[in-house]
Image 1: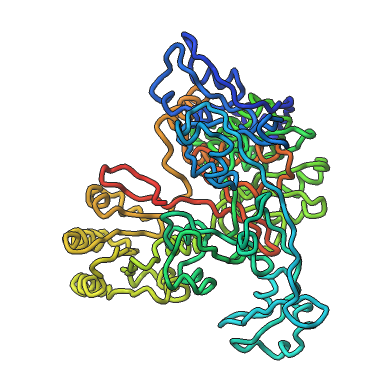
Image 2: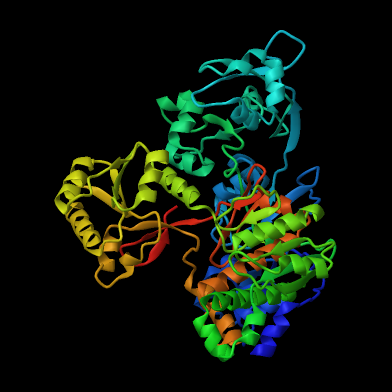
Amino acid sequence: MKKLLMCFAFIGMSFGAFAQQNFIKHKVQSGDTVTKIAQQYLVTPANIFTLNPDAQNGLKPDMILLIPKGNGVIIRKTDKVATDVKTHLVSAKETVYGLTKLYNVTEEDLQKANPELAANGLKIGEELIIPTKKAIVISAKPVNSSNKKYREHIVEAKETLYSISKLYTVTVEELEKINPEAKDGLPIGFALKIPMEKVVKSNLDEVKPNEAIIKLPVKPNMISYEVQPKETLYGIAAKTGYTQEELMALNPSLKEGVREGMVLYFPVIKNPLVGPKKSGDLLQTLKNTRNKKLVLLLPFNISKIESDTSSVRSRIRSDKFLSMTLDFYSGALMAIDSAKTLGLNVDVKIFDTQETKNSSNVASIFRQNNFSGTDLVIGPFYQNNVENAAELLMKDSISIISPLSKETTASLPNVIQTIPSDNFMKDKMFQFMRTDTTTIIGVIDTKKLSTRKYFSEFQPNVKLVNFETIESTNNGIKSSLVRGKKNYIVMDTENTYRIKMIISYLVSMQPEYDIQLVILDPNPKLDSDEIRIENLAQLKLMFPSLGKQITANEKSYFTQKYRQLNNIAPSPYAVRGFDIVFDALLRLSQEKEFKETLLSVATEQFENKFAFAKRPDKGYRNTGFYILYYDTDLSIKTAN
């Protein structure tokens, strides 16, 4: 074991090139397994299960499987279209509506290009022609009579020159130069001049009367959204990241109701942590341009193990931090092995950081090794050590991923946080809950000072019920419940007896009211034998989670492979080690630059979601997490 740990300190490996191809069909032969087929075509079993859901029930001879190779889109010449067009190979669970959104075309255009579609519908394996579109450029007209081009922004409550400058991507100095009277303050309702720039909009080759103009953004850094059939304001808010109130403030016509075909407008980026994302499978866009270099900084603390008189096995059992490190490392090794199977052209080096919460040998590692040309660093574990390493890497513009910490204090543009902050997840939970047809009630223990402070500062409109006695709590809940609406009860207490009483009362009120129980932070008391899981399922307990509930097939595949390599089931840290490292390796192996993939592509690995957003002067923050709930069949499902 000691020799094994010693080899952890420095590992380098090179992987060969991976060639893109298109989707192909595979006819199952006797003796074929999903794993064997995945290895044959250099894909993962999860990819095969995604395109072939029936494969989860087992393979049969002569069964036809779709194997993803490349991005599933072919560019070719055809007799039907005068210019190059895209074609799309239909996979399982796809719909016509989904394809119209994916390729930004209308259902009518899609059916014109594919006449058989109207009669036969979509068929798995069928190749569809996707109509192309061209880009047109329209210059914005001046708002005032001068030769300069401006538009007006009406100042709202709590807005500042700084916040408005970020909204329109101009500097405060530019705004002050154009609006000298704004230097003395911004009164509500003040018409602030904003420099106007050209607007670029994708549209159809043949622009119908009045159609192109209405779909164009009406101001810089604003995007348009056309309301789809049967969409609700709640659904649009969930898609765009804005609350319903914010959408109505930006689009007053919404106060008269949501209508199909309406065009709504809102800023491209609402705040530094929320922006439009494109979901994508990075496996389908792999491209090796040059050899990439990845470094892992992991805290094995080998020197301590060597000086410890106890056995290595006993040390691992007693040292939770070391156990966590080895679990993360084992998952990372699986990710590296998967990348090798895919033929990715990446060199990986691993160093022992010998770290504690306030110290590490990172500076010594950087002095003694040449990090020139390194594309990405993952680790250390403690945030303080991550930020110290980031400062040392700044001069070479090397990005560093913080894999396990959500804390951040320094303003460092090269730090990439993989865990969303607590307040971000709480804000998103409330955004998800708050609609016209819901009410939110807080049942917060008086001892939970940080939770009460959060409600006071960020959710002042949520009513907190009296928590002094069981009777006063029940009375407060009852007086706040609303018939005809969903009542979210946000509970935070670690008093098991109070939890039992609150849950019991909520269950008794369900025949009269629509009630759902919510927690914002993990609560170990809910896992005790005194709390019946049936009651949690009846109340559909909802909570935020970094990890999702993966399917039985995905879980069995990962667990089986991990057991083969390590003779034990994977811990959450092992899964996270795989997800973070594999996601990083895929992002390094794209035609786009690594940082560009962070902002343009949101991904999901086995249990973790990665949807990064730029933070002003503070690098990148992952905004990806899940809202889960207990269903009545005692399973845990995704809420949205």
